[in-house]
Length: 110
Length: 108
Image 1 (cartoon, rainbow over the protein chains, first blue to last red):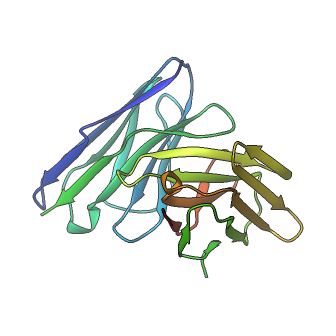
Image 2: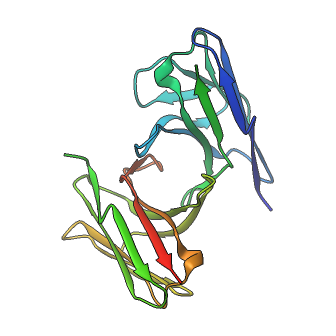
C-alpha cells in the first residue's frame, strides 16, 4: 500500500533562516506530487506541483521553492523565511484521481 | 469573490441530526473533492466526484454540474464527525482550488 511521509512534524524557525521540508511517498511510482499551505485562519492553497523528476510548476509567486530530486521525493525550501511563511504545510500525491495527504508540518516563523 | 465558496462557515448540531454542507464554484472543473480535516490538521479525502451522487457509510456527496454546486450530507451525525469539511475544485491535472472550509461540531 502507498504511504506518504512528511518531516518534521513541527518547526519553529527565526525570520531570515533557511527552510527545508521533505516529503516522500512509498508504494507507488511516478506520482504527481503537490505542496499546499494553510495559513492561520485561511483555506488551503496550492503552492507547487510536480508531474515528474525535475518538473516543478509554481502556482503562486512567493518566497519558497520546490525540488523533486527523486521520483518519490519532494522538497520545499526557502533561503530566508518571512513571518508570512508561517502555516501548516501539506504534501500530497495523486495517482490520477483522488489526492492523498501527508500528516503535515506546522511551521512557525518567529 | 473566491472561486470556491462553502456554506455555512460554522455549523453546530445535536447528535443524530442530518447535516448538509454546500459548495459552489465558479471555475471549470474536471472533478470536485470533499475533504475532512481533523483537529490535529490531518486531511482525509472523502469523495471525488464529477457527476451525480456518491455514498460512503453515513456520508453522501452530490454534484450538479450545470448549477456548479455540490453538497455533502451526513446522516445520523455523531460527535466523531466533528471536523472541518473542505470542498475543492479540480481545475485539471489535480490542481485543486479550495473552499474556506466548514467547521462542524456535533454535540452529544
